[in-house]
Image 1 (cartoon, rainbow, N blue to C red):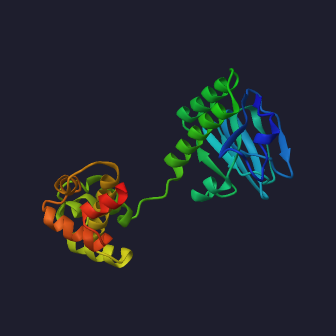
Image 2 (cartoon, rainbow, N blue to C red; image 1 turned 90 degrees about the vertical axis):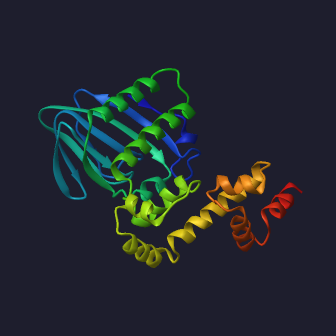
Image 3 (cartoon, one colour; image 1 turned 180 degrees about the horizontal axis):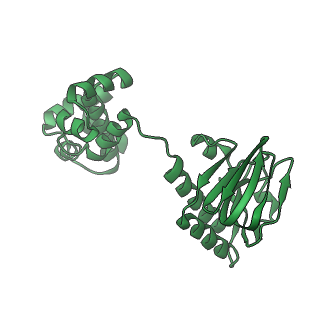
Length: 262
């Protein structure tokens, strides 16, 4: 087992890093664990072989090979083997709780473990046993955690989020409502009504805002002519681009760039 011993990195109230790997390891014969006051770190435990009986919050559940158990810090729990075999791999960590709150993780839950996830834990364990540093372990552990969270708990994208992402990726070329609606797999008129209701503006107004914001970035960072900035931001007409840019910023593109240069 690996355990972080530098106490300044595992202070619970104000951790100096967004993620600190506290312990990680494997138990070929997992002993019984009883934590009436919970554990000081958040824990992810995977059943590699056999079966275990878990008790938390007055509830008992049996976890078998291929199951996993997550428990936040300071949540009372216990577990023991259920039969002859009970092998586990685990990782415990200190982190800013906002990371877990963003994904709406409850105090504890069971989940399905993939062979890849167990392999990643074992690889991280081997890495920690080498000549690693707190910072390198933090980076590697944070990468593992965020990948696991993203794959299993990423909030579903709403229709307006899908539209916004599509506009962000395609603002530099001509776009039509038909193409956007096809991407979202909605009727064009229904999509326009939905977007206006939930976002307070039309899709094309949102596209104009994105294009003007991108144009401001380009004018700030690159010595572009007005025609070039217009074309790179998806405007076919430089005169319309100048008119819209002045309406949004109070300055023409040339005036905006001169002010930034000063």
